[in-house]
Length: 436
Picture 1 (tube, one colour):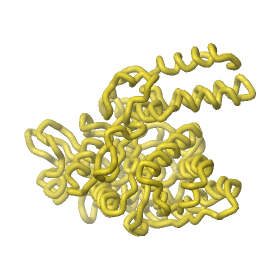
Picture 2: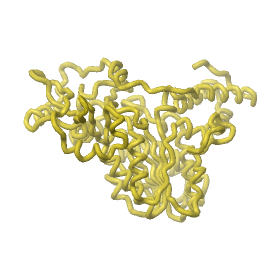
Picture 3: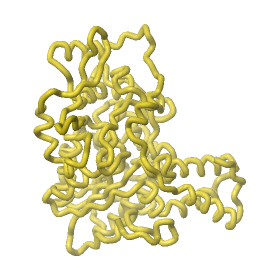
Picture 4: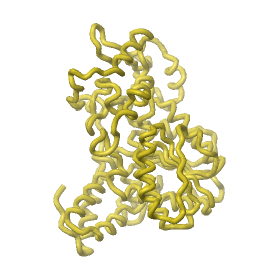
């Protein structure tokens, strides 16, 4: 990225914004085979004894191969050796960085979206803000900082966080209270839950950012015209894990493959039962009590099917290489998520999916960026802010890979045709497009 001079005049700001717009180009995803070709050369230290790996191998040798869903659940959530209970996950010291950690504008624009949706639903007097998998609490903190500027909505809010890790709960509490303690004389109620279904059933706005991508998935491949589940077994005469295909239909293939639309057109598919179940819960809650859900994740619309991978130190790696010490993830299949919403039988409206670039730009990213740039005190600050926004919206980075979906009530008195963020904003590169 070329260095930019300290922006002090309107013409220079416009020139910078134009350059940023020009970064929004068409981007085609590479196939998973290229992901696998570029797996990192990360290997655990030779003398390190991986207890979880030994337990998994013993289990496989005793009871047979594991599904990928079973493997993910054990590697990520094992109470003693699981990744989320033993590692720093987020930021430079962790294995990945999320959008809220990159730039405050991300959380601010989501806060604006929630404000507009609250107004659209006639300003309800009691509002549960529910975040699924809140990470370090940065997104919730940024949202609350924005909403605190509007006392009418801020006074109605209670915060509800779905988080299973006790250590992450402590981090979230510290992050959020550091912000909220400066915002109002009234303390903000914060509640934690292990499961979405524990959250009280009243009007709620749900935020799910990079939540579905870590939920366990079942992976299937079509071979010689038949569907086989991909399983994890032990390699003969070694202490290594390997992928195999099932020889017969599995309980998961019988239960889940019929749920996939246009299955005959695909050669591989990844199905997350928890995502389907939680999506149904969200639809029912929103239909019955009002509110909305904004779901954000990296994913595809049915064109992929083999995305299971590991992450270590911000680099893609073999998911079997060091169980419990690397993050595991799959791209979210938004075609399946959207199909679940449409077939839920609930009175809800689906919006999207749209790319992260589309949503943020149509929520006014350029306007907010221009304001923040004018407040920067140095060229270095401006370059850092510009670089952060570039990462959020360029298609080669997060702008094209991440998708946004919203679920809102289907009320006769509500206009669902022009939802903010899903409707082209005048003056943006999308101004001539139709509402998504």
